[in-house]
Length: 100
Image (cartoon, rainbow, N blue to C red; front, side, top):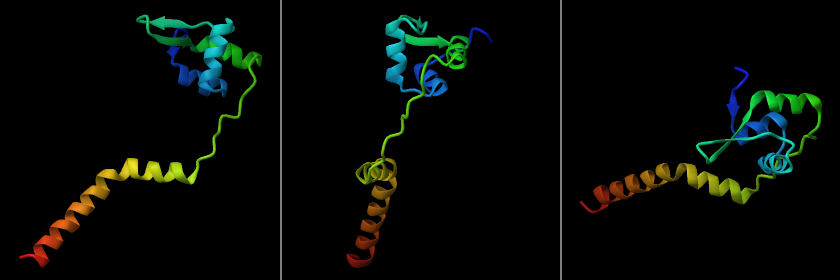
């Protein structure tokens, strides 16, 4: 279990910093990273826990304001199937009851 590898996102969650900050730590040589298949960057959980317990990285406030425009976009993005389905059903009902 000591060689458990984790992703950049998981590392950011453990250290309570942004993914960008994780990449900066790698570039500065403060955090050891490993490339998997020459493409994916991974970290050893024990290395991260050492940094976290050592207090060498300050936690960041990574919360962003969720605007009403983003809420509307997300609503239509995640519910587009239901909206289109409802419109098609209403169209069929209109055709059935008013044109037949």
